[in-house]
Length: 184
Image (cartoon, rainbow, N blue to C red; front, top):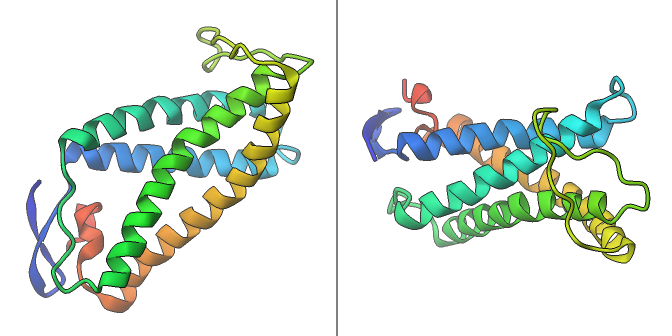
């Protein structure tokens, strides 16, 4: 963790560079995949192979991020943070972690249990294995993937709204913990 200054307030304790790298890389990939997932019919052909590869990349990075997180505690929230806000922040973060694992796994289930299997590769560089499941589990994966996708969209919107609230309304420097460039 590093210390930075916040907008007219006490110094802000930041996340580590590794934690920030995980956060922003996974965030960009999740947002890209939400866009592809929601608008794949309107996008040029061939968006779904990229969607699958991005999803499996999110899974791998999230597992690495969780492993990192287990050994590296995040910086504490400011002591002035109300209890309800602490609870909401922790619940939202853990739900996002769960979804960053569940979304790719249910997508993988959907592809693996399909009666018409389409190629599953990582950006055309190498093939990925299908899960050893049947069409019934694939159907469950399909339904869960759709529902979890909407939940992911809602949580990402909530997370972004909370970050903007801290930046634009509260002006408390909290966003600088994960975005040091905003500490100006």
